[in-house]
Length: 508
Image 1 (cartoon, rainbow, N blue to C red):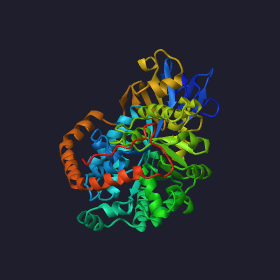
Image 2: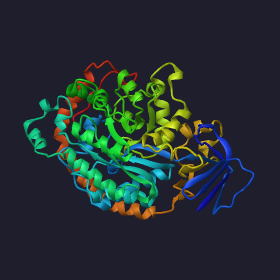
Image 3: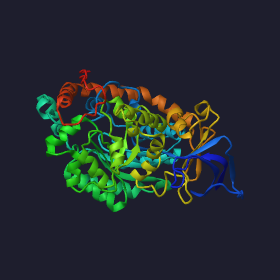
Image 4: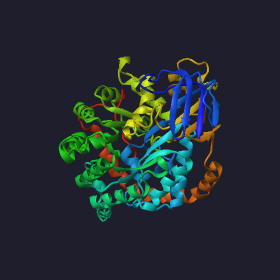
């Protein structure tokens, strides 16, 4: 199918224009962009979309999201990372969801995101008790049906909780420690076998879905498993997706476990390379930042989540200055409470203005747009395929109506996109050359029917979550003490922002 978008305003993010808007046409033939720019000739197309009053942008890329948290969206508040994880994910296991529940959960996130211009998820999936081919297959099926492009992970943790958080072994009561110690985590060989099978079954599905290995983090995974994931990623040209230095607890833990920062530990193991994408990167040292830049790594900045969990402020300007690629993500659906990238962009564009009185240090709207498009594409190794509107690239884009209040009065288009838009102006979304959202409505699935089916399941899902929280609440007091001790530990870095007075979490 061919599509002609005629006479629109375009923010292409290409080498010639960057984020500077210009007027022109876009011709799509099949899955790819055939032409961008002004043209006297009007080629025939199966569908012509009038561009007057419309803005075309590359599809937005959510470079780090955990859709398994969708059922806990809007559930938690005022909890640091380690306390929140205890209730949201659990320690001693969790109710096992059916593949249909997982399908609906994934579809919920995809439908919400794609209708607001998001065309790509880097989805880090952690299931309890363990992922299976059937459960990860349900995620692939949901994204195939809705029309999203995505990398879908095998997320894994193979160190017991007390061995991955400083002080916790000493603080856990004996009965809780015995319960945790009785659990058998997967081995590196188990994970490698899982990756091989999932990759063979699902990678390349629908021409837009990929598998990726995602070891949870160097404090939560053994060295053999981290190495196995890196080897698999390199061998198959996939992102190596992991969490590093999201919280101060992790920064203190790194030194306790390895006598060095977690980034330095990764470097010394040879695990920092072009394929490596780290989520968060809040508590980075100057040396960490230099190592990431030298290795051409990516950092996904999760502005909303870092604020909600009180994790701290990622040093984005210093990362950019060091040559680190910056992408943006929403993180989990119960720490950002949204899969929508316009909310993420606005937060990322504003939060760093309080970090320095030097306004040259602050992020510009064009830099935020780059992180949400080409920066995200680089982080998933697809910068030659998506992230900008250029001939030869995949046709992933969103068309917005500029006659809405979000663009009225119209001044700098980039500022409107980052600071005024909320996704409500999105009319049309194209992924891989196919119109997935038309006039604000999904074209491939019945959104209302899927939502109704999900709502019918929610009473049981909420009851299961309440039982999980009750089972894991005894872990909260010792973890609150860990958080307090680490907050008071001097590691020579202040990433709390202007208010540096610690306030301790309650033992809820």
